[in-house]
View 1 (cartoon, rainbow, N blue to C red):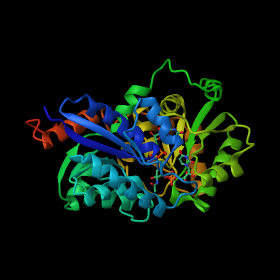
View 2: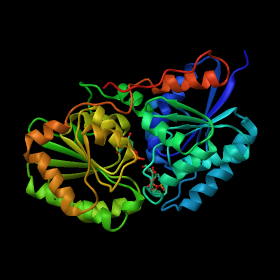
View 3: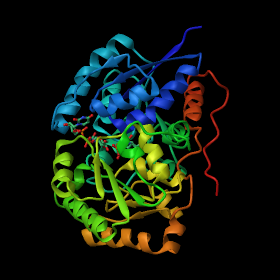
View 4: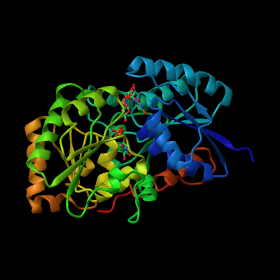
Length: 384
Ligand code: UD1
Ligand code: UDP
């Protein structure tokens, strides 16, 4: 039997975490040959994930540079993808989400007239400048794609409203598939810093912040709020694995280094991150992925942004938009630390983003698209 070649293209940490379980699922399907091309828009943070899932890429463009510009990433990816696509000629290119790798991968496939499947399609804030450049990356990738794998029903409705061409599937988010493999009650962290944390007697607040549109004043406001939370609540322990972006490193170190109950750590591997999240008191973050993972683990999330393209958990009441002003972030966090009813109302496990079977649905949809299955997969429906 002639196998159909599908190529997964990704380059940053979140894409890798969300594509790894899909690559593994596609490799389990005998009708498919799944190649993997990484751009390495991220280097260390990508390799962390590849190692955890045991994925060795077939192609590695190795494009990362310190303080890289969007133009650098885009041009190096498109240039590098050219010969990879020329030699391998896949029948479908899969890209994920909203990064510059995503858009460049989709554009390169389009230049080779290869159909594009967009995983995590249809999320929108409606503001083309926020998140920047991700909102536009996601819109343009949607335009280029002919298969759209939407995590939720409302993501699919966004695409239908835009009258995008192609097949739309509601699959759930593959990150929930990844979570099912990483979180374990008996998990032991590899580093002492995390094993030393006293989850019983202290309130561990998990923090991450890295978004480009928060660079400058918003990120400084976030840092000031964190210092105030730590100082007014000495019973808390703020744990912040700092993104390797030099800008973020510099800002986090300038504001937070030396505060006794704030721990700045190197980026964690996904299994460490997921198990830390499962044990913490709450999460403060501007990350997209953490907003999807924490609700499934029953952890309240304060989103350090003005808007979100993931409204489902806000509507479910487990995520709150805390904004990027110091006072509001501080007050919102303090309320959850002091008002048990408010905390309990948010600390409920909900799963609006997936049931752990997104990768199976995407693989089934691809087989159906190739005429190797008689029916498309059923839509993902969250438990009500
Ligand atoms: C990128 C994505 C963003 C995503 C984020 C996830 C774009 C435009 N942005 O933003 O959507 O939320 O990844 O983390 O695609 N660096 C290292 N080692 C690493 C990774 C990064 O040193 O393993 C440093 C490099 O100096 C690099 C900088 O971080 O230049 C920024 O990386 P980049 O991918 O350009 O932007 P992110 O802010 O990570
Ligand atoms: N993550 C991780 N280690 C860290 C920080 C985050 O493994 O130190 C994981 C997190 O669990 C989630 C993903 O990385 O799955 C989110 O990536 P990030 O916040 O970098 O990007 P975003 O989701 O905002 O695009």
